[in-house]
Length: 243
Image (tube, rainbow, N blue to C red):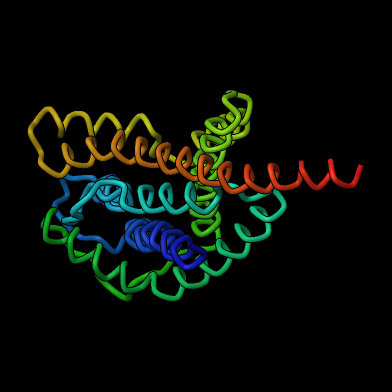
């Protein structure tokens, strides 16, 4: 389970760090094209879509988010808070280092896709991710992971109280990230209405994945309950005999 969580976090962060390379190329004025177009705005828009799987030929929207949601939910089931924090911090740190190490590969890929789709050209040496960009990616991953863990705890406790923390984190995220939830959901919905196959399949996967995760949690809870029940039944005669 640790390996699955590590792979999901690495994919999530890798997409964010790789996309920042294109944004930095735009900031440095290394994208050439027609004077009639805003190359910086186009590059930033493409980078935002790519890191969410909505550009560049990804077979699924939000691949990093889906992978992290499934891995985090399964991993967090039944784990105490202290263990969640210790393991979660360790996995995120290792994933961040790995994603940073391989981000340049993703940057090359996104630039090729960007040039092919927009007919604009990136010039000069590729630029990598920054400390600020890495921090934003980590905060986004932390926020999304908190949403998943809080959702899992809300189902387990049948209470909405665990959801207060992700609400606060998402409010902050909306202030520091230029491309918000409303932006990509609006784009997603528009493409669904246009009949885009990837958009439709990705949308259908949302309730399917949610239903699977809830089913998995309830099944795990039932299995643990059955394991503890015989132990309690066996302990009762022993207490009677001792008395």
